[in-house]
Length: 390
Image (cartoon, rainbow, N blue to C red):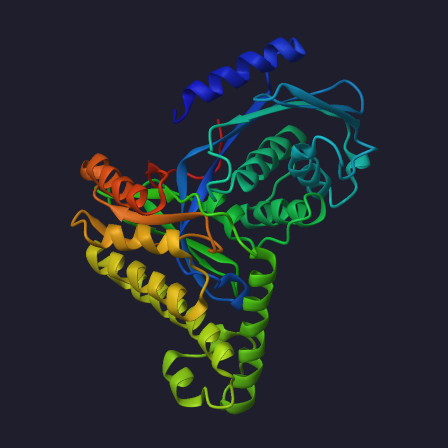
């Protein structure tokens, strides 16, 4: 079992807390975004992967309508009943779980036949952009649906977690994080289509891994910058809907050739913003074809292209992320590198030969330290199995 140490610690703490063994334990991994940046709200495509670190959720039923939830790393316990489920202002970590419980019962948790005792523990590094919150939602929904005998398909479970995040945690996320955690497979990428919400896995082979390099760049102006990028994409889609002869609702419907021919009438900034998700969609589809042929270097080249597009067109990179990608380009065992997630700080995702991991990490750290005076955090990640009951 992956991360068995975390599982053993959780089960031991659960027994001490509640004087009983858990009836069910579920596991869900974090995720990395590999290709397809800012495409989700443009109804486009994304490649992501479930990672080899995650969160376990253990649960047993209670005799009445009382619920207890313990964060086993902090050893803090929240108490409520099935009738008093609501977003919490204190110990806000509980909102990911209580929100998931709430929407598993379609917003009517008081209809649950009994309460529960739960605890969770994970090993996803916080603040590295690996989506620990979605992992917690997905192991919660799996364990609770089994406890109550509720049948849901994986996409519905992912949407329950997303809704919890929107309404209880107050974060307007897309579906990428939850879907990646649910649909992950060992040695494979998850290809998401955000128009149809269809998810498939594409094999990468065993001799490959990713390296996350966490910069120490503070996320600057993220909220305003994210909102302005999103608005530019919507404005551009509206422009193309007026000039192209086929229906356009989102930038997903526009090709690169059409952008070149019909961008006249867009101001320069909006045109630059629009070309990034259009190009990313084409790179994801091209990447799928390259992986089918086993062409990892070709796939990696698309990751480098993706970063250049972020740097020059979408302008959601920063000096630290650019330095990491530039250092990675000079290392033969790095096939590709790009910023991961929203950008403006955070981490880069590198496609690497795992046998050279130590050398890659040392080289990037040396160059980064020479430039910025501090050290990035490098961690090797293998695409892994998605959420499941243990």
